[in-house]
Image 1: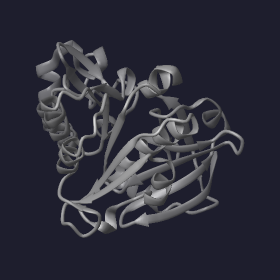
Image 2: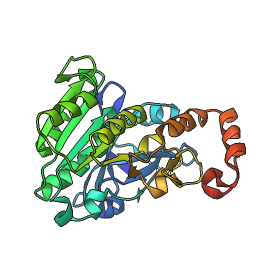
Image 3: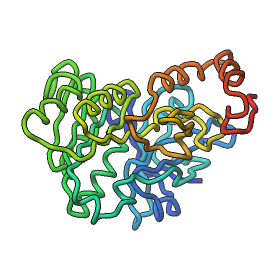
Length: 292
């Protein structure tokens, strides 16, 4: 059992938990994720690691209520425990695996949308700890949905808050702030965008026009987290990938976002799953060929 040391609703329907998981905390790196289960019969829920403390042996997760599984999770309190807390899974961020010598030579822009702020934070924190500053854009529909502002402010080189309705920070979509920063003379060697699929799609459309290489994290489309359920199947260039085992990071300019979003919608229904199984044959479900 993995004890919950802290549980709080940080804004409407978005929750933060600190969980005692020493083995995960010992080896995890920014960009990776965990799979949790509240009990032995519950849904397996993949969640990106928001923060970790190796000395204390803790992992911080942030999640939004999107279904029955996360609704039940939200009702857990300090002192409760997860039945399973498996990780670290997925590949770490390229910024970390490239090493400080390579990454320190880059001008880096992060674009975080909504709950996507959670997986952006540990990457920016790692950079700060290694003497590397990065610009960060955090966007949300309205002020009340901005999360981790103080934490991000402490580690970002420059933090730009933007809201769709103009209720806080800059007004408009994150893409407008990207354009503004470039027009103000900022030059970026790489952009890392994490958030809703539609946000990442339009960020990539813009950064391709601006000739800024862009990495996206496809954690929003995961379901099973092991490559077997097939929900996170995505076409990247000429290749079929699975976000949970091949990613979650990919070249955003090569991702077929329209296909991924359509697949995500279809996968929510039994009829949709059957359609995908028939269409994809032996490549469905990570190659097992079964859909049951």
